[in-house]
Length: 377
Image (cartoon, rainbow, N blue to C red; front, top):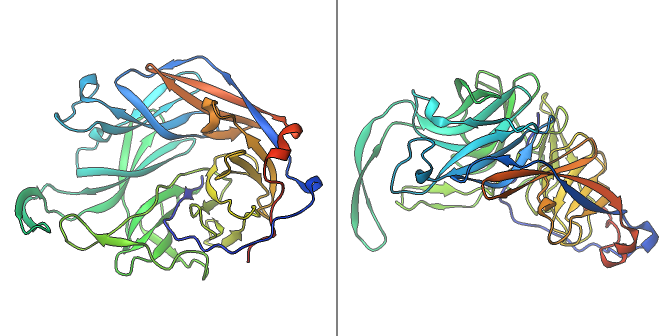
């Protein structure tokens, strides 16, 4: 399995000439979505975007559970609880519940990855419950006292089978805070995060028992030098904010996507080799994320006319562009499988699968950007 992650980074764009002949335009396609049989998921749970799916068409998505739903004990009053769930094409659904884990405390989910056999939740948690009082002073000089767990927190992977049964926890070693992880086929996994001291981005490969295998060096100029940080609400030191990230399978490697910047896509294999892929897009267009697929790279691009691009995996050259239509529910494509674009629509407690088929739309091409600009250096 592989990973698609977004880093918070400043854009460093350069002007690139874009004028070429119309005959060289990237082929344009229109996606037409067909609705499948609705699957009931309940009115007390609301799926949140984005959703994603794996090779067999099973979709994974986070749901918000309301306390009034009665599905599991929830604190009241308080905000809804977020829960990872899955629904297969046949309608079989499963939950991956943190309340199955009884030997960790103050568990907070940071991300997840799913494969054909395993689902893992990345969490930060404490191995013991060590309550104590803390005092902090706000900017207006007021002192506040509160009780919290003072035990040290660590990053863990919580492993489940595909039916939602909890298997085990794996504590992750490392001197940096982990943001997202994804597994290689061997069970080893890649983690991305930032160094706790200088806030620089870090990539590392870990063994399946959570021990560090190797740190990877990101090529100079291929990622921001540091993450933006600020003090937290209690004034207790730097808090680093990283843009939302997404996980997408792509063969046996891992691709790091740095959201809406001129930094290249970084393909990482299990041996730790890193290869640049520079999308050859028109000036002003950026890759926002990749869509899991069993073919070439499919990217979400900030192009309002054709928001999905198929890219050549070696050169980053656009091969096709896809329109979804302003009113299409299928515009948020979860994955591309066997040439079909899979998406989902939620309404009144039901999740409806949508299957998109691409058809050429040459008559619409004159209204969209014409062709890729030269590769950025």
